[in-house]
Image 1: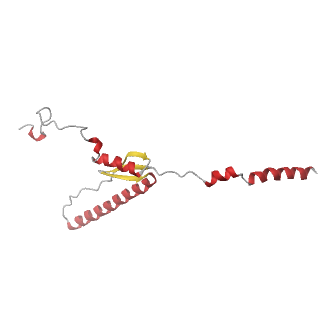
Image 2: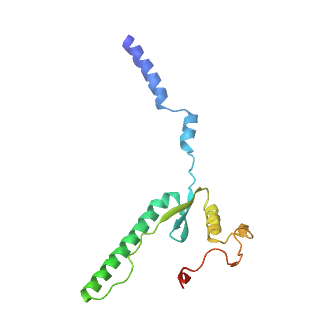
Image 3: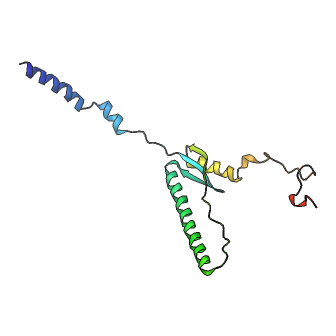
Length: 147
């Protein structure tokens, strides 16, 4: 008799856990959509707007470009060595990736920041350095020393 009573109690408890109520179902059916964040990235002198999730792809792209340029450089150097000619091309440099502004809420906001960085921002008029001209103070041409 006790076994049957305990089985009924366990079934009632686990049965309630197995069938969630309406409030729990609502929470599961409407998950919050994560909004994608954007970064303004500087790759050498070029600015780009990249999704935060796309940063790994950008890094992989830059690495692939560097490896390709390195292979081309090595092939040209090898050809010049075979032909016994002087090879003066500089080695390719790996591009540097710098996040200028991160975690921006929208792509439009990121584009606005990028436009300001490029110098196209209308808010920046009249601000910053002004051309004062050469007043003869301070620096001289390095080539003129000793002449």
